[in-house]
Image (spheres, helix red, strand yellow):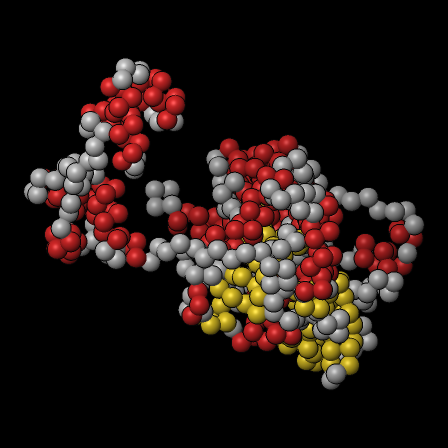
Length: 511
């Protein structure tokens, strides 16, 4: 609002012949303002704005109830039925001012200043990355010290409450210190129920936090900006860590993530303040809570049993416990290793199998392999498939056709059955059977057996049953006795072929 004296001066200067341009330059006013003052002859405007639209509160409340809170429909009724030329944004603002609709809950996120030693933030985020040549979904877990902007990053295939405890213990033990509170969102694994200030934490996680010198605090619902530093850190991961890097495995991904978060980013200026996390952490250290060095690493205890071969099954692999009998044991699983106990005695300790290792029989390094190996363990069929594909190009093409519609257990069962079929006939008969099956697009093992039997009966494949005998064997007494014995009766096989032909004739009513 331009004061009355200034308005009077504008009017008088214009009456004295001064141009609008000169008045705007001397009095630091815009030309539109000067024109408006001259139109009002230097006087203050009387009364409120004539073009301001006023909407009665009772009318808004009545329309809000009639339209069930849909403000777009309220705007239509105000324009069409009430004749008010009001914009939608004005209607929405007035509804929120009256405390109606969702706007009454959308309060401004609290602004908390950066205080040394007061706060850290934790969150997770899923990412699709390539491990070698295989795309994989991984979960990124990051903890962030707000004041010094220090980070700790690690990736997991799956992330549960046990993994969260392992991650926080590893990060805080690496730093040696923790902030007094840890801000989390309302979907965090540490939360049991409620949200914001009313959130109740899982007792297990409350005890874990108390041991490490901090407590979990949930931000208010819809106030993700309360942990904006954590959100920006994930954006930095997407724009600075992933681009230009390749990862051979999950272990390689975590190795590079540790080096990026704790070495490269700690000595790089951060944000508009250009703060260096490593230097800021040294200043913040006296105000942080020291993490006790004697705290044990988180673990989960599982009940298992040593089988007749001396193995303990855990996850997708088998761990050998030499020199023991069958019986129940307790397996203590840590973040990177496991311990096998029986009656408070540690029998063996192993490093956990690497990511992607399955159906592996693991034994202690430096010791001979177990004398007896189980033959009923789940085994992959890559070896059988490679040997089948190497037989002939026709077999390779047939496998491409037959396996295109199979996956999982069905794929393994088919490859294993096909390999067993190849072991029970000559190579020429098997290849001709496969060629015929591919021509008619047959992918059933039972049908393949019938095709092979039919080819053998029709004489399409010359079966060579002769075998060369070493001359030294013919001099043996047992050989002479066997040579003079009666020929074996093989008529039972002829009857079996006749039964198969009769069954095929019965199945074909038009035959």
